Image (cartoon, rainbow, N blue to C red; front, side):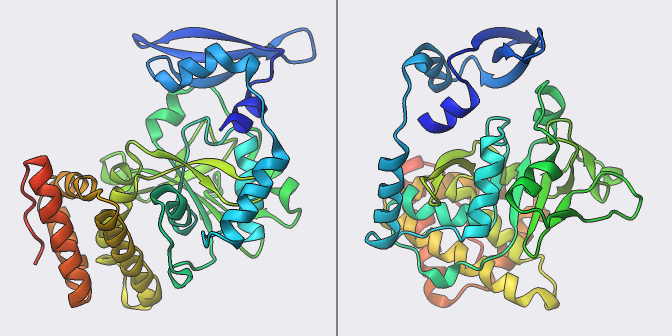
Length: 338
């Protein structure tokens, strides 16, 4: 985190507090090299971690070599999951450009891989399938942040010149880029049917649009900081692991027959996280996320029930145990899906 902060905010600039719609936010001003200034979004002034780093930023230092050795030790000797080279380089490149500073969240399998270190458990490598790098940003944040990445395609091509944009049917801004692997940008569903299948313009994403998806607002609400184990470590935002587990049950219920492999991966990842949360005494986290999703209404309840029904008997027992243990601690009983 120190290294990411130093990349984004070098000592030659200064922090300023700006009021937007009656809320205060930190921004960072620095010279643009042409006699003017450029301004970067930092984050809400009410965030104590950000405010503390604003105070200390001129004294922040990082040691790349030490962190690189630590990542190597964690993956080689500690049994934690490392990102593959292609995916790691993509995330590292976008992180250095400020993607996570702009409150974008790493989702999908790459995010799942970070939970090993976050929870302090070893994840079976069979739960990881190398694939696309998926990123999600709340539509409102992108529209109101008053900052943007450099052009996304140029950033991706700096990591791999073979990257190209995936054309859209209407010729508008793309939501996906490919180079053999893929990069896709997602966003929250804005609640109206006319927006559901239409890529949303995302001012903060450097010319990229994002595909609205149902249930995405639940997944990326209150993301947590984690480290992608690649190079010297990449500071990223990922969904809370309890939300990720519940979301995977929901998504598994909506997979079609031709997506059986993805559905099975969803169920495996959900089951692993339920077990990890149970063993690390974080059952209340799962119970609260589950109850929140359940209270969103019949469509959500049906999706959870269908997803949970596809779990093995053993994994159903673990889910029941985790929800009941979490409910006892939170005082809010979870209605079991089976």
